[in-house]
Amino acid sequence: MSSVQKKTDVILIGAGIMSATLGALLKELAPEWEIKVFEKLADAGEESSNEWNNAGTGHSALCELNYTSERPDGTIDISKAVKINEQFQLSRQFWSYLVKSNLIQNPQEFIMPIPHMSFVEGEKNVTFLKKRLEALSATLLFQGMEFSSDPEKLKEWIPLMMEGRTSSEPIAATKIDSGTDVNFGALTRILFNHLKRQNVHVNYKHSVENIKRSSDGTWELKVQDMEGGKIEYHTASFVFIGGGGGSLPLLQKTGIPESKQIGGFPVSGLFMVCNNPEVAAQHHAKVYGKAKVGAPPMSVPHLDTRYINNKKSLLFGPFAGFSPKFLKTGSNLDLIKSVKPNNVLTMLAAGVKEMALTKYLIGQVLLSNEKRMEELREFIPNAKAEDWDIVVAGQRVQVIKDTPAGKGTLQFGTEVVSSSDGSVAALLGASPGASTAVHVMLEVLEKCFPQRMNEWEPKIKEMVPSYGVSLEANPRLFQELLHSTAETLGLSKEQPVHS
Image (cartoon, rainbow, N blue to C red; front, side, top):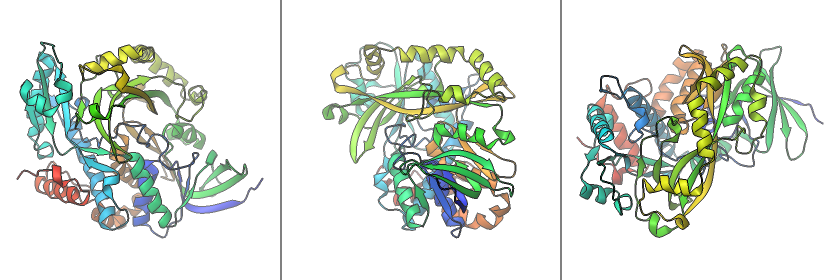
């Protein structure tokens, strides 16, 4: 047993895309700071960031219908879509800066151009899709989006989905070529290799067992070296908890007032993956459909071309499931252990409110393979069961908290919780998570280092030129940045920039 106190400036818990992004930003802004990373697993990006554990979509609201809602008067609200698109542009700009500065190489290892499409069936949905396109076309962020309800045109766009389609229901799709497929697992590993070259101490197979405030205001972490078995104590003035589903229990251990009345509800996911290269070769797009009535937003069905291990794959899903674990590698007691006296009422209120979600999840867990095939055949009418295997994706912990909307409200999205003095911050929640990592980590910097932001701003703007600027209100800047990042990241072949 060793109880040596080791002091450092910054500790990042969890070696996923969020810690990788925050570490990379801090190394540019405060290169003199000492940073340590503790990760329970044997490598970076093994949990939520892993390429098999998320959709791999560069979420920019080009195809995700749940980011554009219909108002009671029939008009389309695009504010969320604009916000998410702008946030993804920040990620593109930062990755582009890292490539240009020679800090990381070979962007094609983690990002590829791929058309993003939305596909709907039924007259009402076709009308919605048309109205959505009109609303989005009013801003330059969605330039180049096409709409078609002509079966012949759709055969050109999505031959695999059109073959054998016999339904007489009207169908329609929108298509935009500036979409991307992002391998967040590969990106996370690339960023951690970069951080190691910058003298960041990355400790794998190290589990953070406890976190408490010292008398001098710094944070003391009790860390177990899982291989040697010894216990170490590390202190830091700033701690970021980026452990995916493992963040909530650690946040609760800090005891900060901001951690009270927050609960978590784990949702697991499954994808179907095509094992027949001939079938996979017939599809080249990410095609998002509409979520079923009563289904949560993270369950929107989509048929995706993915690039994993430099190989083109085809995935369909996600199918939601339930497991009490907060991480894929977690424990079946995670959910029970997260219920505390200060959040039990919040959790119970959510249980009562979310009966429809609970029913939906139970239904999903009980789905037979044949039922999953039926859902796949809504996308690929001729799909054969032997061409598809099941892959268990990551665990996502949805945040439950008390909001103006009431007690125990389930939050779908990503949330930063930080102490009032900014010395500790945790990231909770799920989609669009990884795609907006740069935006979210800049928010962490603003919340936790307000006194440094003036001094850091010029450097932030060098890395992320549209920081603090609305791209929607600056169409020329948007076009310049879309074009230059496409060039640096090797996306330009499929990115016509319309003047």
